[in-house]
Length: 126
Image 1 (cartoon, one colour):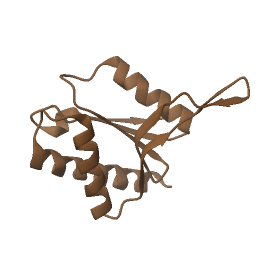
Image 2 (cartoon, helix red, strand yellow):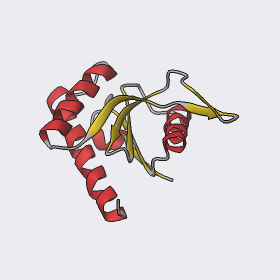
Image 3 (cartoon, helix red, strand yellow):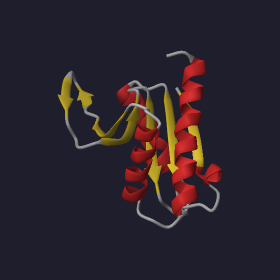
């Protein structure tokens, strides 16, 4: 996928997240936002996998440790959702690690527990 397409798809995902936030506001559980964002992505015909398993490889052995990507869009963009008071370094580290493990070039970290969603969105590029 070209950079231009990554940018367009990232903007579409963020637009869907803004719509969810506009309808629900902050203060709900992460799982609620996840299901509502899944509904929006489906309505916009954006291909994604929900709670996609991500194994790790350790000394040439693939190990399923129970890691799951909240949303894996077009198997290229990882979307990690949060509903926390504020994003911290551990949230960013989690996303960057998932991006490396899944070989995904783009990651979106979205915190729904903010007044204005654009203040809760961070985009990462490997």
